[in-house]
Image (cartoon, rainbow over all chains, first blue to last red; front, side, top):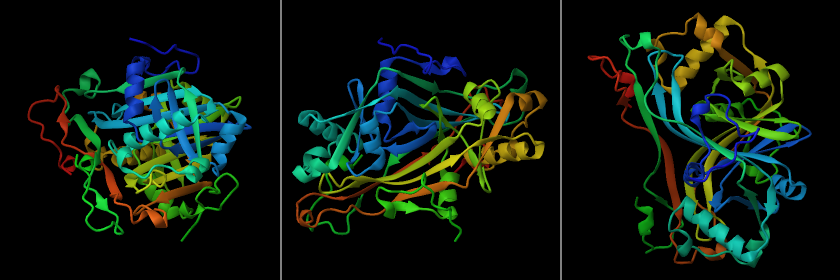
Length: 214
Length: 214
């Protein structure tokens, strides 16, 4: 299994047993998450932006308006970024307050932005991004026109310094606490897609597409 | 309605109509979110940590192990942080690829860490934090002992430089696209608490607490 090298920045020092460096795990978390947060720094003042993203091979892509202040800053100054993604899978309810925890899968990436200008790559990013948010959607929609392309800024980040951290399973209590009369277990959490709400301005006679029933 | 002052750092320049500065909105987002990401910077290299948190009045609290490298660094060096929280409420499916969007509520806070050492405040933080993750849980659990208190580091962040950004409602398409034969609408997303999974080591005869049926 291919692994990311462990660097000073990605070495997990707290609960290192939860650290995961294989690409398959890192990429599966990235592909499931609907947004990431991009952190960067100016004069040691940190900033953060939550934003949608997609992954294609060994790159993570974000997009935004050419009018976006932070996108332009990232693009122009090639600032180093830290990108994180977190999925919460469950609440871990231990017998002791101290051992309460959360089942989660998170990824942290260190990288730098590159401007995507090649038309084919740009087009592919928007298709993958759209279908990630809503599988099957791209084929249906009105594709970007020239003006829209000019208004869109796409940045890529090479994924070569990355790590995941994963906690799963039951609570772990101190040995002497297992005899307490306290309920313990996990409450799973899932992000669910609910029944769609048609646009009030929807043209008459347009049926809900099959890919939205899930 | 009480509002946060708009500063250079919290001024929303992109889609400013989505910017919200009233405390009530900011706090309701913070109180619903199960985790935040804390960004800080060393020598202009940004780092990010996803972590649980709670809010009490005008402070946001995180906790961790005294053995946590980043918690100690924040505590010792009083590094400026940027904290963000994001809730995803729905996928906004427009007729054009370009106008696809997401309904979301996010908060960004700029602050600095303070070490919480006062026993009553510490205790209150853990109670509020536990009941935030799982309402009703605190009364049931085995409370922290002296060794556990010594192993726990709690940091507070004053919330006085903060903003929210909110998108809600139906897609907005270009006027000429409303006549296209393309379905448009919103697919709501919700984070759901599912049926609990008892710890395989659960002592016989302990019923699931009522607050876990929801």
